[in-house]
Length: 158
Image (cartoon, rainbow, N blue to C red):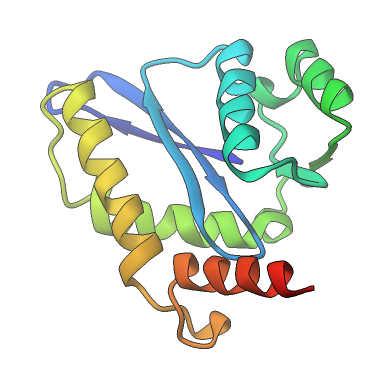
């Protein structure tokens, strides 16, 4: 999990919570809001767990949104390890840093968002395109969604 910041056409700032499955390279969430509270991050994680199951660990940076009591309670309750990257070491979270760089160059720098609703729709459409139409060489030239589907089928066989 990480955050990316941007601005609407009129200069109002907003942030995007990005959640990436580091194994399948799927972008699980790109949640745009003007501000984030810890409980909103916990709610998003609850929705993702309901859809995908619990991860063994979640890697985050050292931002204040990830260092609060609410997230500590969530990981304790869900028996998930919270793995903080070292300050000044973006390579600790390289997959999400690469994803965020693509998000910035292909969607954020190329767009003027007229409203938060506009930003949410266009950012989520980009995420869906990235998951379903962009093959990754690290995944054997499969898209992240196809790779995840292949893993799911393999698990069902065992």
